Length: 452
Ligand code: ATP
Image (cartoon, rainbow, N blue to C red):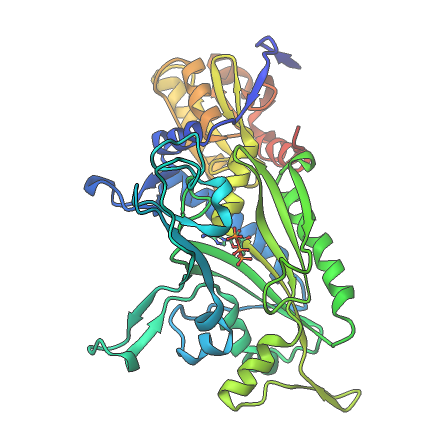
């Protein structure tokens, strides 16, 4: 029996990051960093539910990459030999144009003025107010510098990596030889990256410390555009597989003036956030730029020897690079709905921090005993939570707001017929299910889940 106990109410989507920031703080997804000291610009801490959601996203990516026979994993260090960043072009070229306003003391990216607000009048763009005095743009390097060892001198300068990719390039030969991989093959890595962004903001969209999930796929020159096309499709499908609605995704090929110094072709996956369409992932054909430069700067050969064809060459690289925090922000924005009294996160069940919540109808010893048993069964199979506080309606609302797809209530009927009520988050339908069938029932529902 399936019954829908609540009338259908219109659904409102997220229109302002402020609502999401407040939900994330209230429910323990994301807190401002160092909050008791007033916070530190653009840094955020993931709370108990945020860290689960993030792990689920990382796991979804890691499995999608490394379950393939042609991709190996890596976890390289954040600090690397400083020559790495000369070879990669970051010391010279990882810059954004910066302008200051001498009047309001604001700092802006000269190439993003149309998205910034004047410090004197926020409805205007910097430079539009009569009193604005913008300086000429100057190039600002986004890499964070620090010192290795006790001496703060130029010879001990090291950088916090601004991308994870270079750890992969310098390990190309180590991985290829130890894993005995043949081209084409890829190396996948998840890790922190740091960029001293001029204008961080929009919650976790642009921060100075963030996590990337990057995969570099090494291919024979000449086959690169074919692989570039294949990876575009694979990556778009990954985002769809996390529940993002197709109507909220679009794809932006880079024109010749947008291409990065290393790229032959590039393609952004964009999501429609409340602030408009923005990149969540970049797919790049990096040619042999990186391996060639590392070969030149290190003096060590980075070529691949093709045993079968008896030929040596520098592989080309197709890169897929997605921000973990930005992907998580897209997932949260996509899932957020307000429906009448309730706020609900319609997360893909595989990403939801908890899959199941278990409630006793009342705090009576005879119900608690059976509830404990159901809860233990659920915990053995799913990430589950327990709640006995407040009315069942209130308990549903709490779980809706954190995206728990199934709530199980143990009541008096269950004591005699060994059934419970399972209530589904999205449609709010309720069904009686035999306790012995619960695991299978939830697994099937999770597998059949589709975004609206
Ligand atoms: P943008 O144009 O937004 O600055 P980008 O083109 O410099 O991004 P890439 O260098 O291609 O970005 O990085 C790959 C991915 O890493 C981006 O698609 C994004 O998801 C993520 N990313 C990059 N910079 C940041 C940041 N400052 N904060 C959070 N995520 C970031």
